[in-house]
Length: 299
Image (cartoon, rainbow, N blue to C red; front, side, top):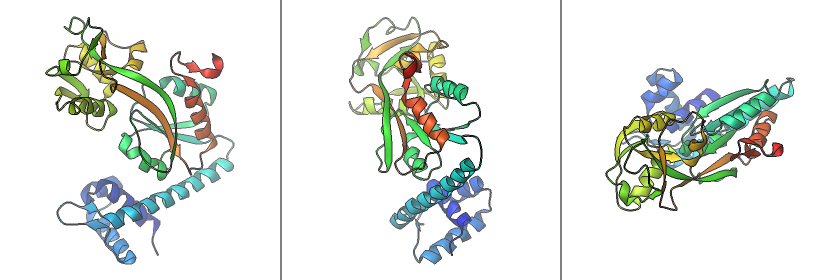
């Protein structure tokens, strides 16, 4: 009989494909974790991982992982539904995003309207969002790059141009637009791999057989504008950031490419049982007017 703790441990090992890192995250001894995975494979009668060299989830393991994630997600949804039904409050909403700067307006409005709701914010790269939604690890995800996966529903929030931010006085600062070819050799400040800004930068250059000159990778994308303003280089900056009252001084130049854009989309699991708190959050985000920064009903 499969035990829940073994299935939960398997999901972590499957995600990380690394026993020692999984043991560290789970706070268990690595030999104990190895035995748990071995017992699970023995019970199923087949290996779940390829162990030639680096640990890799095999095809059977991927098939089993998808079922386990959905099953654990349903159990968690049931636990939360019972908690919601037996309490007077609306419960908790769990929101994942690649960046929360874009969401500060609707989040503040939601908290003012529903002060008793606990909001959990989870940073997540886009490639992890479908898995987290299917597993009901989070309720809602906001992505700034496409998520191609089955079992999700979505609403596009807005689509906008992404330009190049430069320090004041930079040779490009007075330009109306700039081409990708003209950006070759420019020092770029950008986010680490996986973030939508970095993916867009790499994709724009790769489409022309080029590689950007990256001089600074940051873990905090909110720091990019400040580092550009300080003169460390140029970088991709969405048009949305130009409306920030606290943005550092600098210039914003349009990029002469139809592909230099981002589309921000809200996703949730098609079969998920969203709590009342999550449904209200979905309504708040989808009804937000992204140009004026107000809910649509207040316009």
